[in-house]
Image (cartoon, rainbow, N blue to C red; front, top):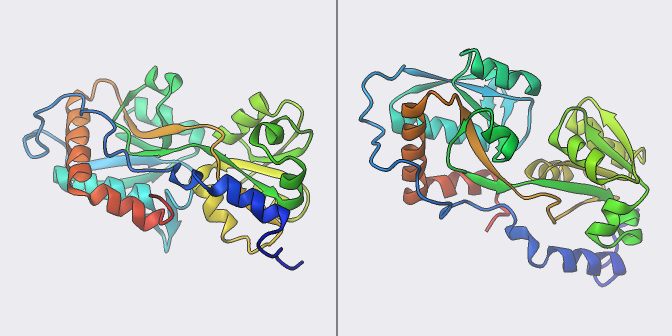
Length: 274
């Protein structure tokens, strides 16, 4: 099918949605003071030399494997933090549901996996200052967007919504898309491709991934809706008792923010951000 010409109803709708929305993911350059000032990354003398960073399933462009190595925005961030602290990084790939137990059992030191700052997470672990603002986003078929041109209308519609099993998106869809049929898929990519294959009307997942996959599906029939269904701040998780490590991470994160290096990392992987 040919892409509709500018000026058609669909593109006027998308232009209206996109207008103020592409600033939804931004560097938190003013996200608040570091919890404890005065901690210098070079002041700690008893620290271990290796940081074990636990990462969940592949979530490009934040964290994924390429050529056998972990790469992505969060991988670059952790490596930069480790350099600030004079440490090495070991990435440990785990299933999402095993990250917390691995942290509490001292098998990893950090959770780096698009971890939202929310009541559930703050009740189970310590969190660094946020490094990224994102959330959940929808990808949908063009004709479905035309039938449901508002975000509340999309949520209330009786459609078929594809999700990755066990993801934050699945939880959101089951709670909010009460009139929809929820379709579970084993991976985010298979759920997104269900929309291309007309097996689903909508796909809901982490916003940076939705934009990333929408550019790789190579289909004129689907589009990412550039409006957040939820707004989340992402942080790094660690054990509550690791207070010194928390201070060092926050001090290093502040250094990266103040020097502009955090903004450079984010711009490399999310070039559409402002």
